Image (cartoon, rainbow, N blue to C red):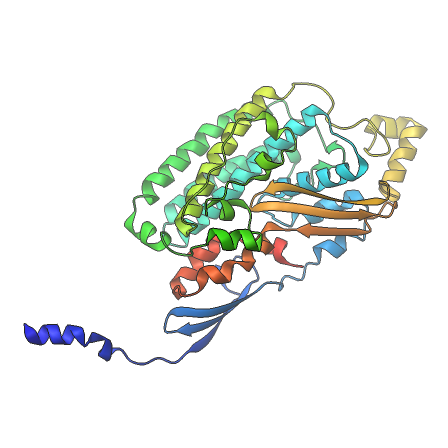
Length: 405
């Protein structure tokens, strides 16, 4: 017995000495969620340092926006966060409308909220589903993507596209809501709740899932605030901040909803915060559907801003000229600059735009939440293990389109 105790005491002496090792992970790696490269300095399997390098996408979003008209920015904005592109559409629309000094009709504001919250749910379903799959739980991933596809069915009926919609317009939306929108939304909400309950039943008491997420990838509250982290990542640390509550836009002040917050800032808290945010989005959707008028204008009635109806374009010289000038010359906002921000899928998305009075943006700069949140990922990974990179990086929900400068 004494001999066994002596061997246990000397167990550390049996460990072989290791030398630091440098390992490249990505950019072509299935765990990188896009073109991201990590240069790891390892002590065995412990991460002693990590250099996270975005920028391999070479998309050039901002400079591309400065080459066309104001209306031609929408396809580029769609591809920032291509998992919830409608929120990008709304964010850019609000920025230009702030520059011009116009307010969209009430029905349009409700329509934007409904489409945006559907997109937010789809975004969180994708993030949590992929996060579970990367820990070996493939079934919840299929459940989440199943209901996400049903949400995309609604978005497709409304916009004509499942993902990159290009449906927003300066001063309104491309088309009014379909007659079935309200019923479609009310029909999908119980399905979302059912899937959330099924996933929680499978994961939240699962020992493997808990061990791989609780206490892993911890983000400190003070550091998160200092680095400008926003969205579910910030709220998982206990900070009660959501742009929709702190600085309401698009009638969000009319809705009764809560801001879910965590405590520990780990992977487990981020999963729970996103899950509860989906439920809050469903609360908003129920209220928006009930409050949105069944008729009324969807766009501002100003031919200098919005395209005239097609019957006017084809049958009147005034409509033809207005259409021609908007297509060929573009909308001409007043000279000036504005900054506008909204709560996107991953946090605070801001657009800083500058107008020189022409039909082409002089400057378009985006504050993408993913780019800011990714900057803190290094601190979350230090002294963790190689196996913890995948769930931690997945909980950041990095979207490559936002990170490419």
